[in-house]
Length: 111
Length: 115
Picture 1: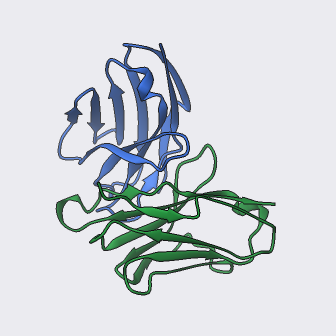
Picture 2: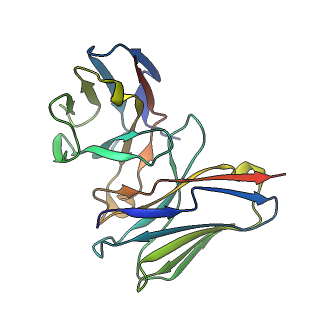
Picture 3: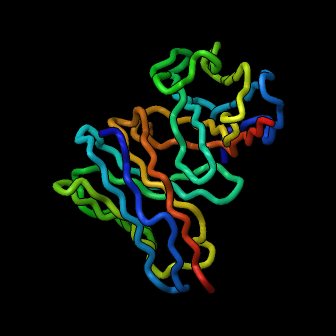
């Protein structure tokens, strides 16, 4: 019930294409859903986050879609660039406590 | 821009030795987290502090791991004795008060290799 399941494990996208990463959760107490981006040798950095009272949030080329009834949320990266190549983690937490991270998706954007 | 500081960045130790990691959170951040990240996996919360108090250490292997944040500012995570399975990246994060409390700012991590 505490898990956050993330897919795919890895993703290869052409430059300019759309990258889509999906996550699913079980615990209905989760009310904060961030996405983190991690480059090799660095700590994760917050990319974008959403709360369950909205179905979509967009920041630049990054969009979170949230489906509360299905307990699923996804990250869309529009116009993917080689600089977006990194590992992406979805996460969920109840009120900011005990954040549970997904297993990560390694994205590679081909130039 | 303020950052979370961690040291050392890399540590190689032998099995059964003691190791310690240090973290200095962003100034003013009351909440401090220690995570363990095994290669190819997401971070796993080990311990969470609110000021100097532990609010969650349910996943901390307390027979060998200890963490403290004595003055509610910087923190130390210790492993004694280290085991081969402890090889991982140890990440520290902090978050501040108010609206952005849930936003965690991560340090660069300490990569531990136990031989």
